Length: 269
Image 1: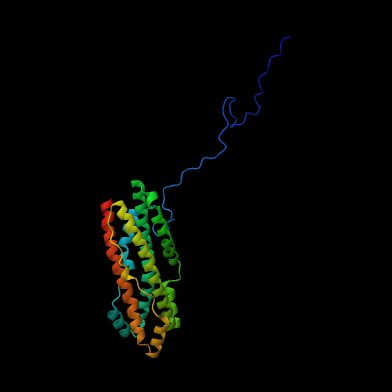
Image 2 (image 1 turned 180 degrees about the vertical axis):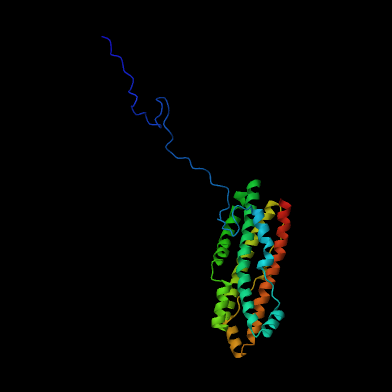
């Protein structure tokens, strides 16, 4: 008995699903394939310069901004203008004290961040990332502190208005914050510089080691306030001199290290 012929499916019949496998095809692997991690440093680097810039360009921009951020004071010139203007120039001095530390912290974070990123790129090229990874991880904790400092309330215009409204009280509070910022900033950036010196040395480049004697202790704030009161404000002049001179010397140490870094980066390109 002959079988009836099989008719073809009607034109509007639904097509089989696109992911259907041919009869002889093996089923796909159920375990998803995880791509390898990207070759980036363990620390996530937030920057103040557009991230499209290369590490070398970031270093160059931060290096060139030094004259804008690192304002150098002359105490006697500032004092003379303050006396001649019946104290009004003193408000400008206080504004610059707040502004330069805020901008210096930001600029140094960007420069050191770019320097670390450039070192990671070179370590990847030379196959040294796993060997140097612990040093990058140690740096990440110090970078986190410097990054957090950029969010502190240090707006110079607002602090100057507070100084106008609160007179010497706001200035004394500002002096305390600035001194604490300098101590914290110098310690953590010095730790980063030490790690970078070792990393770049392993990569074949020489950077000068930071001078540990540059680290300073915090001022005795209670003692200085008492001395200012009992000297009828005369001790405040010495305190103001310290607030100008100590960052000046800090900037000088930074400038020497940055000049050496610029020479190294130029030799790498």
